[in-house]
Amino acid sequence: MADLDDIKDGKDWGEDQPADTSRFYLKGAAHYDWGMKARLSRIFNPQSGRTVMLAFDHGYFQGPTTGLERMDLSIAPLAEHADVLMCTRGALRTTIPPESNKPVVLRCSAGNSILSELSNELVGVDIDDAVRLGACAMAAQIYVGAEYEHKSIGNVVKLIDTGARYGIPTMAVTGVGKDMVRDARYFGLATRIAAEIGSQFVKSYYVDEGFEKIVLGCPVPIVIAGGKKLPENEALEMAYRAVDQGAAGVDMGRNVFQSSDPVAMLKSLAAVVHHGKTGAQAYELFQDLQQKAAA
Image 1 (cartoon, rainbow, N blue to C red):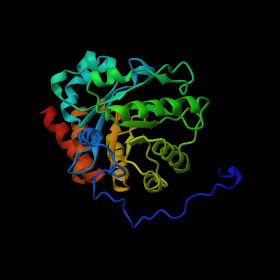
Image 2 (spheres, one colour):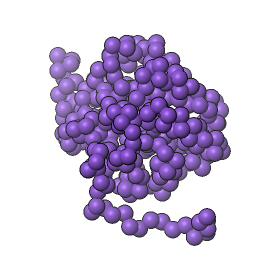
Image 3 (cartoon, rainbow, N blue to C red):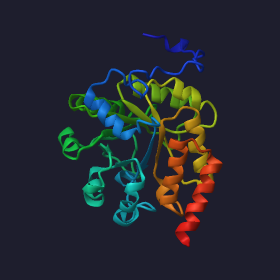
Image 4 (cartoon, helix red, strand yellow):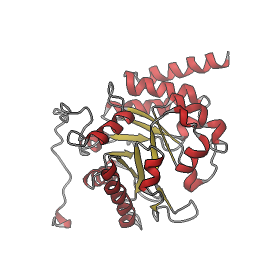
């Protein structure tokens, strides 16, 4: 066991040597079974290797937050414009038409609220229900450094183990508490732990300093969270920087459904993630699309 007093920051990141994807296009996935790869191929576009996920799972602990008051009115019309939907089983069954045929990353954690300790979660979906819903992946938070760190990691381990039996990948989400630091060292630790316990991909946050090292140090794909609502140009620039530094896409919620034009925002994110547009170019597209929609 490593001596806790002798942990040193990594130095050799091999920036000039990209991960080997010759046997499968996603980093770290070469040795997965056929079913696992097939589901990942629905989540991550095989041409770009990336994804634009629409997250609207916030209600499981926040309630009817702005933009999610009536998901049948605000979210259902957006489904066709996203690559993947990330949501709870309740939202999926009550809001999203099955004929939309969109891949689903199913939120499988529960047991907390904004009125309580966020890290005190449990696995809230049985694997049988995930299979019934046709989930392409399952998701839960890991709260590294929080009061219930051990429990949250155990939740994700349970999903990984049960998912592996059915060929369903698990996305670990790096949750942070109100008072926890959000820097490259923290997210480098959290994302690496997520990968080491077996998560097939990870959702984390973008940071201005050191994000490329977070990606290099994580042997599975990372998608970035949008976090709090930003002006559209800033959110698109963040997406561009993250992808440019190695992220495999975005999983955004508030920066989409709270946007002045959510459809235009999803299309602009796709321009960044799949077509290599810069943040500035994507914002020009956003403005053009918004003007056409208003005409």
